[in-house]
Image (cartoon, rainbow, N blue to C red; front, side):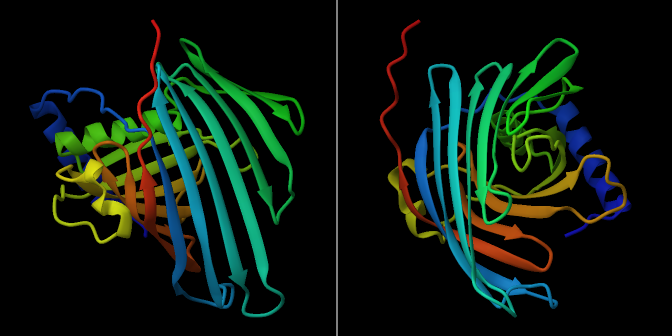
Length: 271
């Protein structure tokens, strides 16, 4: 899923014109929720693609008391075209303060190096300081305009509410080895209020809410004229819930259906 320069420039011009003509929407109210997605293989091409694959994503998001916390577990059962079956699992937990100044993360991936990565990123006036504590202490810095995951979701929703068709952002989420910053190109479709095909989207908390189809292409920082590392597509609800997942890795793609969702009661916050 690659955008030509002409299409990209056209979408940017369209988004800029609409942004100038409309007032900035207020920050979105993101709902705390627990979601379970069932994954299955949608398509595969080439000799590197698996013969079969399925799995699950368990996701928990908390938006309470001026902080955001996310926990994601993804398990994939894959059968290569040759060789033994492969089972991999990845976990990531993050904490992000509501002002976007402090971000803490811990990730672990089995089926690869199996190392746990832990670290913290803190935003200063002119720079983002990233410090890894595990597996080896390391410090890095980045531009202060780099977004954390929840900041990126909020900006996606605000852009969609304005009617923008594209959002370009640099995002740090602590994934992989904790050192990657991605250039993310988001293409945003027209709002939908029709019935959602995902099983659990009939939850009363989602009825009547707008949602937008979005496609996020993740490029490694510094990569030029290359295909994205992967493309994540889904329907994004105005309260931050996602349905109709598609994870495209180039050789193969997985689709994920929202099988179950729960909305815990809001926490009591003391100020």
